[in-house]
Image (cartoon, rainbow, N blue to C red):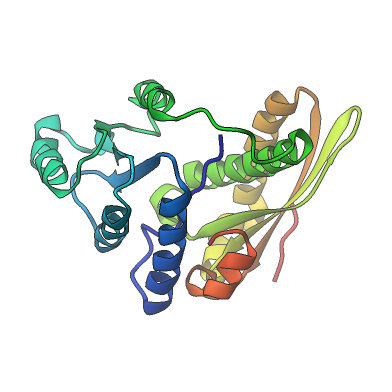
Length: 245
């Protein structure tokens, strides 16, 4: 099973991002057995409509996921949106969840398993393990960034695994946290490096549980100006100043 995440849904619309998103979404939609169309709270944004139009062109199998339902005080307020979604597309299911509170996640997993077809393996066992490890490291670090900073730094970060050496008694990992602006770099680092140290410590604890042995995690924060609107750079990262802790 391969998961592909089309980024940028929450990023302010620009000509570059729209062009990249059009190309990326079209490619992913075409090759996907099942799509999770994720929107936030009780409304659809401009890029949500853009992606949905691409989905409509392919007549794909899609589950609609309404995330951050915990931020809606009255769940009845979701009913107009659900009705709008039902009129907009023939979704397999529409399910509200709260990822941060782990609400609805188990039900969503069951839905995914019920709709996914069985296919032959695309990658060999060794390549699959490497891709999975890089993905897990990147997502665990990024999760800690979001949990530590919340709305202070919404989603303008990308975590790239530079080195991953799985030795007998220890796993050595180097990652770079990319941000779009110098001010964001200071936010991620924090005063005297406290925020970055906390992010690294929390990620290391989870990674040691994942690997079942000691993990040495080294992190840097680097600024890549407007990386989230640079189509060539995004594609080089596999998406369609430094500080050491």
